[in-house]
Length: 142
Image (cartoon, rainbow, N blue to C red; front, side):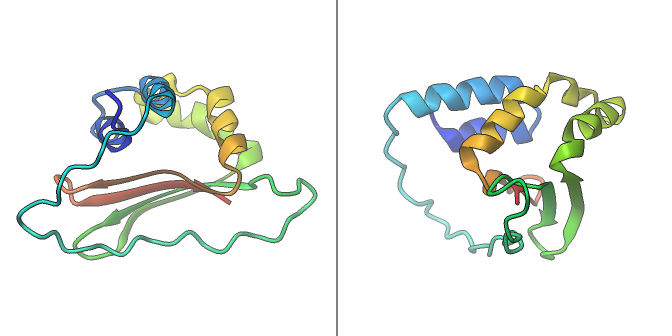
């Protein structure tokens, strides 16, 4: 499996864990990209992505992100369904608390997640548009 979007779709639908998705995405980086398929016969109305707020001015931690943010937006109405903002310094604690309410978070590796954030810097980590559940999910750091 080498299609990044396919991997992210499987993760969004809960068919694979975050750790499995990370492994697959790392493997996908090492293989050459597969040419994209032709556009669907039925045109899909473009959805304007929710833009991450402007990056804050660098603070004492330089260009490193300060916030971990998750947005889930309804594609039809454009309204946010979920908005989560966690200070990076509290992320590990937040994941432990979240694991109590969402056991699928148990597979998340804090060190792996922070490693991804170090690679990306400030910006989008994951973006998934799920037509079936009519949701647009964005995970980013700033």
